Length: 314
Image (cartoon, rainbow, N blue to C red; front, side, top):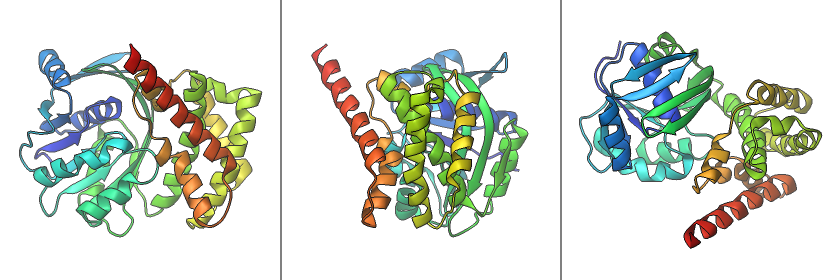
């Protein structure tokens, strides 16, 4: 088992939750890289990341570091930043990795995995499809909001450490596995994100908004285009079955606030271009229309612009 240093790039909600799975799975040397000095100070003051889950609290004794100060080389690097920030992590990852380091992309949507493969090598880069929910309520405090599973895979290679990582995560309390059908699971996760994230962000509501009559109709329209885009990518999805699947996830997570809504409320850029924007890009590339997803993407960008403009005036 891997007990040498593991690194997490990005100590947000998912980064904090992952640190708990690693620690409970037997990894005691975990370095977490942050962009904010205030986050580092908070984690040092707390003595680690406090993760609240199932009525219990776990203090994970991670070592916080600033992303401009790379430390030791890591055998496994888990990239947990938002998709819009992945490009800013490339230099750091190069500095803390060696030729055989396993680098795992844990972002929503499409684009992050492809960028990391291009810059760092497909043989070193894997993807983790994260079906878990978490909320960072303070710089050093994360609340778990649902544990599903994490599905790992690579597109052109199988890194020898990938199965070991899945076992550590599984032992740490989160079901996980390695698949050869990575593309299918990425599209399934995209279907959830493409519906729940923008609809909750636009309405500033919990996930339950998707279950209203208007939410259901828009969800179906979004998925109609997504199914066409997935087929162009070689993945066949049955629309009605996919629609029921997404509504079931929305019901299970009805009290949650999506990550995109959290970004909007904090005045941050969202991952819309990596989610609904991907559907638009794939369909338009083949001369097909993506009216609904293009409208959704533009509405989120409009909200981002409005939020940043209003914040600048305060």
